[in-house]
Length: 566
Image (cartoon, rainbow, N blue to C red; front, side):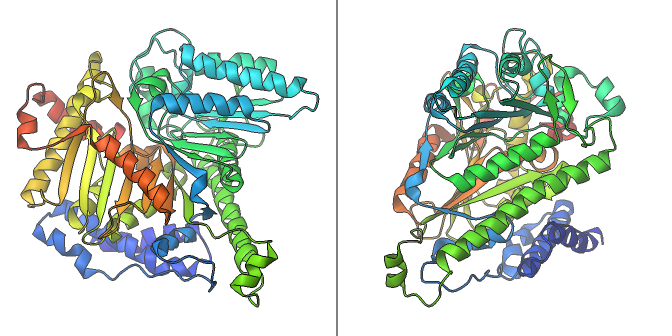
């Protein structure tokens, strides 16, 4: 009886995230029912799992004010705007990047021409020469902004994780490939703080779950398994890069990720600036002497009351989401609905309205420690509603799907092609100590999932593929959705989440859903997907018989106990 009881509780909690939104009632009610059924399926799997999508009503369509400029078609996804702000843009402002080098060069170029703001959120900043180039670019731009004839008052805000950013890189990082040297992210940024104290802010997020005896006893190299700041956003004036890549040399050279560049998108840049500021306000502030302080009036993340801290953090972040959503609703009304008496031709002749967008950006935030679960809700709904004939290409560098996501992949009707890292391109491959067994743990998880696919007779509908590239590692994540009968994707998710337990329950995550009617942008996304999948091989039973795929017994025994920590 646990599952039925849990449904209404979960529904009320989610509805509480967005009070006064009656249009969400049916959607959230259905989501809670889905989660209840997921719990039941975990206890009792059977072929009846395949009938679940057929026994449920469709997600209700969210209506919008009638307007000749409001687009139709792909706006089957417009229900997302009931949860988060919707940013309508022209597809000409969206560019998909393909390589680490392109990502690195673009960031350096954007820093050099920034006049007003540079905002960077990452897990950590590396300590090598390439990372120093980024710091030097920041220093140069700050110098120029102060020495210019008309100072531009450039502001730099950097958000990193406290545990990862404070650790000397001579230690082996549990979540990242090995590095060398003794510097850390903090020491890399101290010169900027010391020289430009009024123009540079460095915030270090510390999870509220790492506290007390746990914080004292857990070894330094493993403390980041409890929870992290995992958002990756790089923003320069009104230009934004969303990615899963960190600020480290391998992510600039030979660690494959995904990246999208949003050009001249002021409202989106404002939103992510406010989001990083909000997380920064509940983080520890790095000082010029390498100490940290709490923002005045804020509860300490690990010394103060945990519940009070999480409530304050929830309010700070949700205020950003609610205010941006309200602003976008007002902007849409003013732009497209300000005078319903004008015809379309008269409106165009008036010249005071924006052209109708062909692409929509939805920021999806997941911060389970603060009871913010928007990304989880949207992802589960997208997987639930993918109809027969649709194709979902899903990729993650760390294949460790939550049980809810696995149930949806196995129990819905769309075709799935899941791209994951082969052991040789896993960032931990060849590592010493416990970390060296992580690729084998992922192989074990992969084999268990593949066996379940086979047991359900779903091999033709759900396919696993392993990425391999000599001398490279793999870190790409996200999905591409192709509607039934379409050869091009109309939606992609891109950002920091890995679809695993950590992403859903432990870390701070952000990604964007891009919905587009533009054939040109759809082709960019399709090409991105193809380039990644072309470097992969299809997983079969023979895959697990290859040399190096034999998982040791102790790894098999330990994996169920630790899989929620990596």
